[in-house]
Length: 430
Ligand code: AMP
Image 1 (cartoon, rainbow, N blue to C red):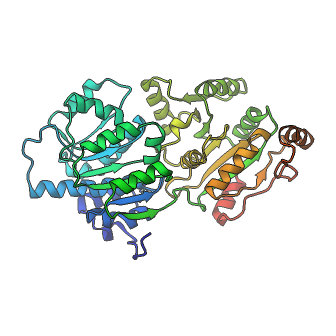
Image 2 (cartoon, helix red, strand yellow):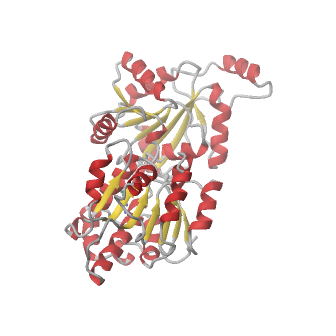
Image 3 (spheres, rainbow, N blue to C red):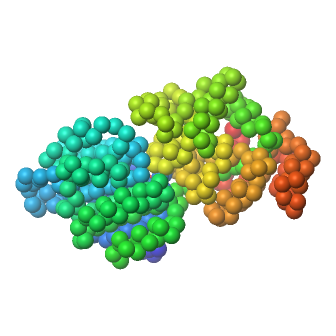
């Protein structure tokens, strides 16, 4: 943790004027905590470990210094036949995140008038276009590990001259099974480089990586989900009534841009069908969908043309949908870390967001574990008109675990405590 005074505006961070001008255009009024704390050190060349996920402003935290360093190096040493080299490498776990991060970098770089080339490469689409884009090298490459290895083996890109490495969502990268790809890539990189590692959680594998990879890093631990702007609520429902409760909530609150998480690809379609029967149109987003369909659905959702999106955890990481108001766990995520990733889709960059979980008696125990691991404790609430049949729950729980007791099922609808007055006022409107 750093204790130094943190700069309150972008000018104090040491960024150059083309970047400052862009931030003004983007209406970034002040740095987020991670930006304020990390950017000066990153500009000074320090390694960084940051416990932060999407919504914290982490992309700008690495992108702005990286762009600045590249531009400054170019003016020190004008470009000479770049070959197929890359200077700044950003590794990300998913194709959506690759595109999104590259788009952000390009957007931050507009006032460099094309002086910085950024390319995104990821699997699931033809490699030819990506190879063409990599001709003559690139300043910044945003890549998923598997596709990058393929491109290296076809000599489309070389890593020998990387001087900044960013591992974005390191935990996700490892949990998606990229461990071997990652270690092959790390071996190809020069020993001397600046490394910035971002991870929402720090399981053992990530800790091991930080120990071997980083050199005297500064460490920052930040939560993207700001307690004052992200409201988490959990509703107990009767078994078999989740769809009815969800449809009721969607109708009642007239939500726009509600992201609903389920645990299986088939469950996406299944739930969409059931909602359709209740007059709610929902689109689905999961790994079996063709890339074109995923892109179309995501664009539609971002643009506000699609109100309800049902997704698997593939959407839980990295998708930057501005001001997403509601995230709903229809199925609980299997891992407590994924709970944080899912709810991190909402309440972004200071906007008020709502993260709801629907739990029936089979979920009680698992939700307790999620709470414990994430050091949260939520009041169990009920939805009016769908009160839980306590006798049935008692009987079911007794059957499954003789000692277990349902939590909070005897209470009427209650509100979580500890939010600001503004959030409470907003909640009343729900
Ligand atoms: P990230 O955590 O990098 O995915 O960023 C989350 C969202 O916050 C993106 O839409 C960014 O454009 C936005 N953002 C990042 N930094 C700031 C800032 N300082 N002020 C306002 N919005 C920001």
